[in-house]
Image 1 (cartoon, rainbow, N blue to C red):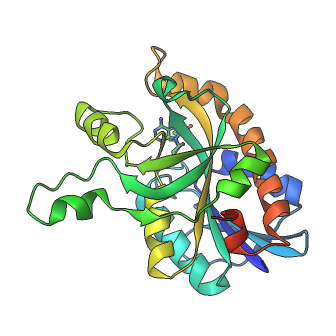
Image 2: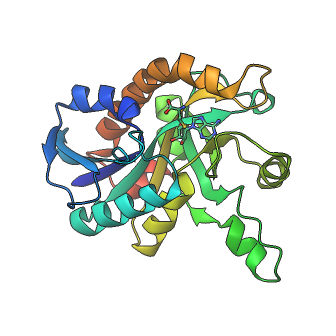
Length: 244
Ligand code: SAH
């Protein structure tokens, strides 16, 4: 692979990997306040596209709209061999999830908060955006795999819970499906790399878990991303799946 684009939502998630890669800032589209960085690693150009801060609210632009815009512009401009949606995520103890685990995507991405009970629109709302096959990569690096489910809230409502049970997802974030939608439109293979900050079905409060584990999970994420890049750089996208 000659080029990989990594899309990330939060500055704190991106900081360790930007430092490790020695990435330098690159011009990004004006007025959108994205942070684009570039590095060379294992003979591969790595572009890290961070969603940046919201100028009105002064916080990171988490969620689907900034992720989709950032992904679209970064993919159009850089035309990578692979796009990675990387960040933190919620997991479930009932699915065997543990804080600090790193997951790769599996089969496809879905939404859990787009409920449209009009005939034909129901499955459009849930979505089903293909993830690149990554069984070989997961096996070699010892990472878990799970379906990524995306919504624009940090919490989980009863309706979300029902949707998530139906999809069988085990990784909950606020960007993955949006990045995957754009990747499918532009025909770029997509992989998720997500480190678990919180367990959705734990008794502890999600925000408290997230804040306590963000730095540790971002370090784990950094380790996994570097390993993924090193493995992918001398290979083709088909190699991620291994022999079928
Ligand atoms: N209060 C936090 C907000 C972070 S929102 C702050 O310090 O700013 C959570 C971010 O991490 C999102 O980008 C999302 O993709 C991911 N995430 C982590 N745990 C999540 C969960 N349980 N549900 C949804 N997204 C989660």
